[in-house]
Length: 96
Image (cartoon, rainbow, N blue to C red):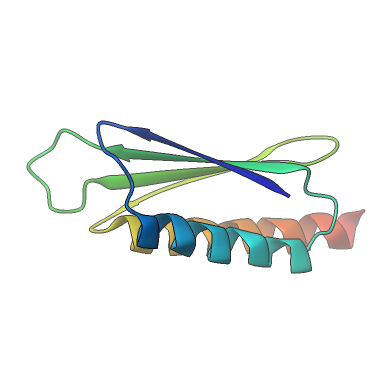
C-alpha cells in the first residue's frame, strides 16, 4: 500500500513518519484491498491544547474511507484515526 503524508504548517519528524507507517500498514491485515492511504496533518489555530488534527483517507474499491480526529498530539490523533478506520474496514469486509 502506498502511504502519502501531507502536512500543513509543520514538518513531520522521522519518528512521527515511522509511527504513521507502522500504524497505517496494520490496516491491511483487516482489509487487503486498500490501494493507497493519504494522511493529512494539521495544527488548528485554537488556544486549545488539543489542536493536532490527523485525517486518514483510505482509497479502496467502491468508496474511500475518511477518518478525521483531533487530540493533543499527532501520535494520539493517528492512533484514533487508525482505530476508527479499523472498525469501518471490518464492517465493510463483513458486508462485502
